[in-house]
Image 1 (cartoon, one colour):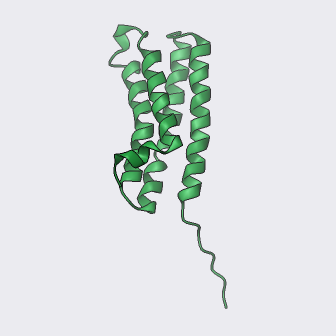
Image 2: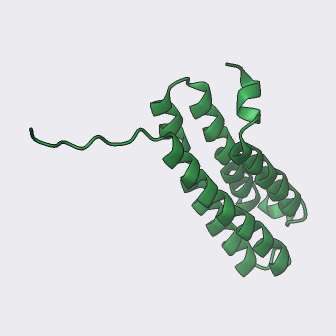
Image 3: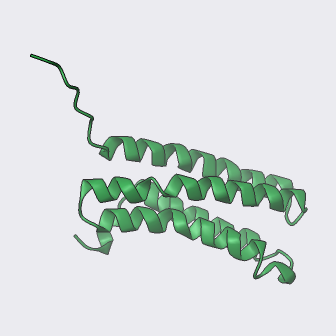
Length: 127
């Protein structure tokens, strides 16, 4: 298993697209925010595909699920940061909303990805 295997995951590819969009969005933000909101948005975005990749690279289903469960937290964090940027009028509302919609879709897909890899709980039935 090498780094190429994670690149075939659609959910990871979508995470990379969110990173690209986040960097493009924040490029036009005030320079005074470079070490503030801009940095936080970029870090939260990067965290999403990074955790998916780390989980995949660990080589076990349990680790895959454990790291994948971190990614939705980053989607919520990023959504909140984008809402703050909207309130502060850092970008056009429709541009931020488009990224938030993409992020919402990604969060749902990550949830599906986790469910598809999570070992099914066994039920105990007395004999």
